[in-house]
Length: 145
Length: 283
Image 1 (cartoon, chains in turn green, blue):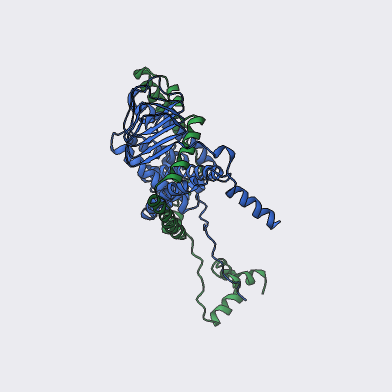
Image 2 (cartoon, chains in turn cyan, orange):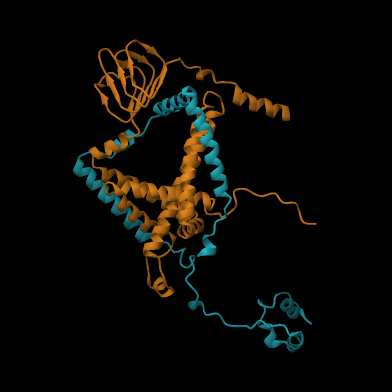
């Protein structure tokens, strides 16, 4: 019994080709009446397309085309409306406004009627318990696919 | 060591910030308010309208039916409002006039679609970066959202509600040192979840619509293959739907719910458990 025989005994399916070359193993497994794993060539084309096949391909022309399309139409619409895209940035809340919102939110919570506060507390506990239960389920995407 | 840690925790939770000792101001819940005399501090109106006839030396928050300025009414700080309109406010606001909906209303004035397209460009940049950095994770999340859509949607809804309620609960801690960092951490986490999840939904939509079904088809394609292409196709499709008047925001909102759900269901595509269960070691 050599190393190849040992490997076959450890994992007959992965080393099925060994039986074709080793008389001793064929006899041994024949005596044991063990179903011998046959070495069958796999037809890759017969298998369904796996999600990772071709996934690493990078279609830069598509990315550039998509970006140009979006920028082009947006620029045209801004031009038609006669407004600079800079207005968008001015609409974002400043640090001052953000601080006001945060302080206001804190004051709202602390001064809300008792019933609201109890409701918020119960809601917080209930919703986070449901979240915990849902997060315990393992993802099954790859197995289902 | 343990005592020091306890001291630090108690300091964080118990010791209020000096700056948090704000002026009293006033709060109103569920009814309208008229300011007839000067108020020092912030005024907050939830579920009603505010009529300002005198000076508010602070910020004014109105979530409900808008703000009306009359007589010598003035606000020295910011006016933050949601719902209704601000009437007669020109020159009476010392700080900024801001509304969470002003982005949309500005968008409506300057062609709403131009704004949406500009935001789609930002989404495209984020999607390309994420697809290049974590293509495998995105793909696994995309498979998950296609194979367990109901679970992802339910999880997304619950998670979004949890974010809002957690933010409200953390707001209790704003006067203490720990409040702001907790809120900031929650905000960053929620933002990352939404961005990652929405890009995974782009991938799922792209694969559903333009993904290769056979190996021959895949081999024949030059551009329309790979994670990057699927993400871009999904983004363009959802972006086009987003521009439709009523259906668009609804579909985009649903995509966000699916996205948050799938990001959490797959732990950002890593497919690891969030909670480890303790079991005694086998002898």
